[in-house]
Length: 341
Image 1 (cartoon, rainbow, N blue to C red):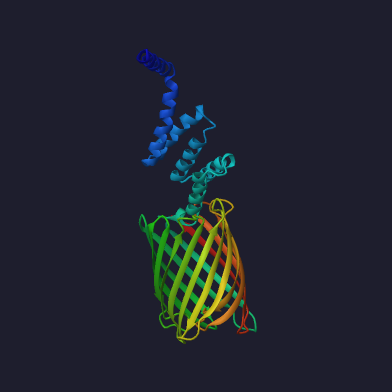
Image 2 (image 1 turned 180 degrees about the horizontal axis):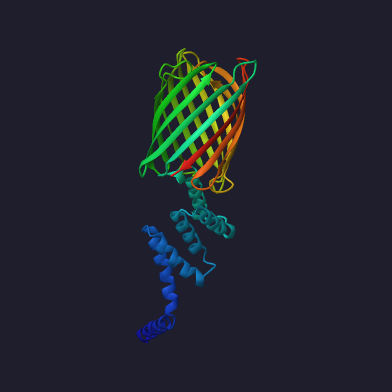
């Protein structure tokens, strides 16, 4: 009797499955979509998950998977909206919160991974105490040399106190993992009057795996000026707000001139990306400065923006005010043009 009962249940289940093949097929569409995403086929995953969501619009897991698909396709706006929608229904859904962290990570700079640019930048400074104004023009180029490598070059023409220096430099950036960026640079100024005769330095950015909204930064450099040698050390921390559209950076400023005592200061800066290819920033700093190779303490306020001019161009601009302990205050205006490729 028990065996007959089991056979009857199995037969009933088979009949029910045969009567509703669509349910199994739909479930297979969800599972196949997840598998396609994990296998690196986001377009196919989007098609399959869309098929599943057409019949099950309230499935949070499917919406989460679709947001990850949009992230893989580089659709950051759609991915952000998808993760936020899931969190609105399930505030404790860790995978959705991690997804927003990944969106933020893309906007931190990995968004530009593999892309190059050419930037032309100029600056004009108005100085107090009747000092002759300063001016400069710089050309900056960065080229991808692989999926995770970039190389760049910089040339700057500086005019100070009636003297002219032309500074040249090169750099390399490495992105060995999704959470680590490395950089190094080397440069100098032939027949320098006030810019560094030799400069070498490097640094890194490290995103914390346990708190993806937080990035530790560190930079150090050695500069040999005509008047003295200077070592600078700049540890820092960047904290990204949900979605990665805004972040706050706190950096330390440490300077040692000619083996003398360590002079310290700090910088606080906020950045905001209201829309793709737009960026606004504002900040303040107080600490040792080596613009002329002579270390002096400077307090400054600054702000600026980057605005699109139509693909691939963007306009950059900034305004800053500096108060120097040496008695020469400065107001600087910068304007530039950047083209990405």
